[in-house]
Every structure is written in structure tokens, then in C-alpha cells.
Length: 115
Picture (tube, rainbow, N blue to C red):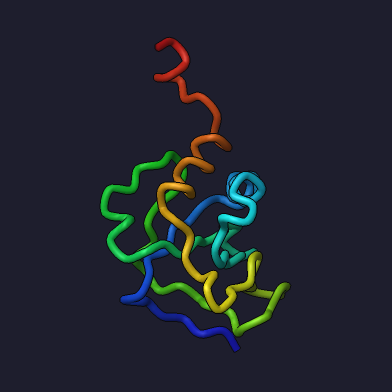
């Protein structure tokens, strides 16, 4: 059974599923563990504590609520599961790499298009 909790070891970034799947492809091997929540239609990346303090990426947010962490090696639902299973050294994603992948996935924003 999945465990719902918050952590002092990481912060979670909630990303709409349609955007998250593209960012996942962009990140490739730089990606840490990713939780897929089919009910929320969202993917959650785990980033280092404090990295979300200045997080501002359109359609995403730092999730300060409880996050359901699937049991190890649960690659499919029903319910929350690992889109990218954690490894011994693959829990966290670098926040800057995630931000860049999400910005690439989003493409130019209206304010940037005319600049």
C-alpha cells in the first residue's frame, strides 16, 4: 500500500501529466524518481529541499501537501505508481535541469515571443 507523507529530505514539484511526459523525455538519464498519479493527472518530481523556494514555472507548483509515495518497484496503477522508479542514487532530480526541461516542453511563452 502506498504511503502518504511529507518529507524533510525532498520537495515535490507537481506537473500536469501532458507536460510532464514531454519533460521526462527531455530529461532522459538526468531524471530522478517520478511519481505518476493518474487520479490527479499529474507527475511529481522530487527535488532537493530548498530548491523549490524560488520555483516559478507555468502550470507547475511546489506541492507542500502530502504526497503518496508508491511502494518500491510499483511501475503501474491503479493509483499512484512510479513513472520512473527510484534507484539507490536516483531519487532526486536537479531542480535546474527540471526547470529547463519544463521550459523547453512549454515552448516560448507569449511574453517571450515578441522579445
